[in-house]
Length: 442
Ligand SMILES: [Fe+2]
Ligand SMILES: [Fe+2]
Ligand SMILES: [Fe+2]
Ligand SMILES: [Fe+2]
Image (cartoon, rainbow, N blue to C red; front, top):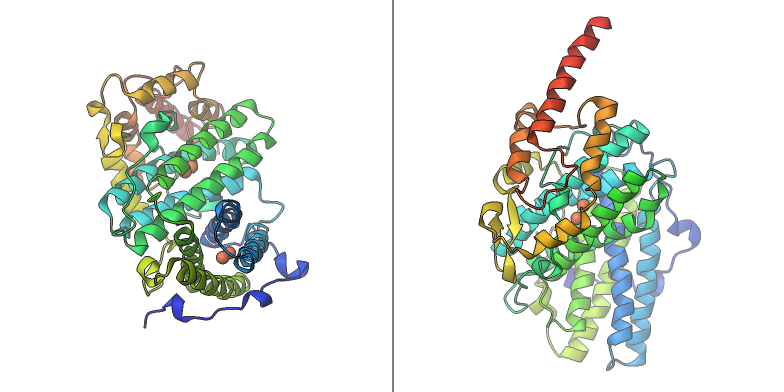
């Protein structure tokens, strides 16, 4: 049986205000939490931040709605704000910034991989695959620091569900802004699934950017601070890329409707998937709250646009984010597309070999890494701790690491401190040799 959100009443807005005790949930235990409970709370925080911010933009820009509706938008915005606190503050005080950061990149990898496989629009799917390999590399870079500074191993956070190994090297994620702009969908023909998929990943990427902006300075280690800065700048590019897929001619009311529908779909999925009974109660409540928001904004959509909301969101709930291990899919895309780059005009993606000598991103990459690339330094520094980089993957992928790096590295605009394939192979060999020497002594 399908679930049609437009047929549900949800919790009426006047019953949605909660007290402080209800707003602030009990934090999970970082040693016990399921990694996908953590990714759900991280993603839903991002979705609430977007939902809250959009209400403010709506009331700032909308001229022709009456006072009662404007007041309702403002009241809904306050409820989003309360939900955001509940979602984000599930995080316990002893989960470090780096541990949370690994959680953020696990969200990006496993969410984007899911979306790519469930995206009906081929071009949007290709864009998801492209972004996927960048966040995959961020996870690997941050994992080096988590190990060096805090003794945290990747599986302490990702619990064996996500591989942690070289992706498209982060130093090559810096592009000319114009190249990040993609071709947008057509609002009249795009499916609700495409619209919800994009808004979901966009919300996640935006919050990742905000998290790095607000926490990257919390470490004294200068190389790590620079790495947060470098990756934050890539997340800014990801926001630019994903938002450019949205048809800018959608009306504000149409966007409002899509925002509430996206919240409904995501909480619906959280309810279906959650394994923590206490946290599931919040997802159930928040689904009910969002159905209430959807009712209100659907009425506004009908009143002002004289259109049926079904034209925009359809008549069925959509599953945007089934969190589950995506290792096989990610490995396939990694092997095939690590050498992809953004081609001019927003139409195509090209391989390193196909991009022109005057590709606009080369100049950006040379400028930002003219001293060095911080994300490459993550590997240079970890060598002192472990002889080689920290990775977590199956044997097949581990054995492919040097070849994948070779394929993903550009020949030009490469930072001076780059750990290239030869250097990486040396590090791997040294590590193996010292490991066997050490074993003789234990
Ligand atoms: Fe919300
Ligand atoms: Fe990322
Ligand atoms: Fe990202
Ligand atoms: Fe909402």
